[in-house]
Structure formats: structure tokens, C-alpha cells
Image (cartoon, rainbow, N blue to C red; front, side, top):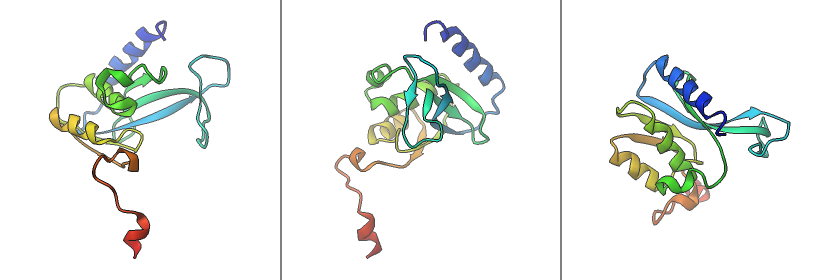
Length: 148
């Protein structure tokens, strides 16, 4: 990745120049299809694009790519902020933006209680679905119990 890092930085700078600034942003993962041989190629079962390079994306509500970062392995971003891989990706992508209050939307890959606390501490808000195992000391009710 070191060879293409200048290209990634240049692209992210250009994306920010033409970004129609909005308060709401979406964090998600995307796959770039690739079937050749490369050490960073990923296989994700049950996805439309199963083989390729995974990138972390920060998007506007209209779908404009504001910022991206290629996935480089399990331990690269994870220990940087102490929020796990998903939370650290959210904070890392947001740090490159102008210092404003944003509302971030993400799925259960990124959501955790420590991430929401960190976003609140820096004056931001977030909305995301939660996994059962990431809700410390605050158990969620079962779907079956709600229907009764």
C-alpha cells in the first residue's frame, strides 16, 4: 500500500474539494472486484462482490464518496484508538474532515457503546444498529418477547 499511498491521499483531497458539505454522513465498507493474486485481496461470503479489495468509505447522503481508506489487515487500525476495528475506522475517516459537528450513520459492523461515547465527547452524534454482544451491561430484549 505504500506505493499507492500518495495516490490515495491525492484522491481524498480532490474528493473533499468538490464535496457538497452536509452534516449527515454514512460510513460503510465497499468491495472493488479483483480476481487476480494480491496479498490484500479479501473473500467475503454472502456478498454480491465476494472477491476483491475492501475499502472503508465515508459517503454523503447523495452517495458522493467523501473519504476512503483501503483495508490493510486486522491489526492496522484496530489498536490505534482502542475502539475495535469498526470504531477506529469511523474515527480515522472523520479526522480528515473539517472540524464541524457531523451526524454519522453506520451499520452493526461499526456500532459500539464506546464509539458512541467517543463521538459524543468530540461533539458529534451517530446512529447505528447494534449487535447483541456489543451492548455492555444493557441487554437487549429478544424479538420473541416483544411479540408476546
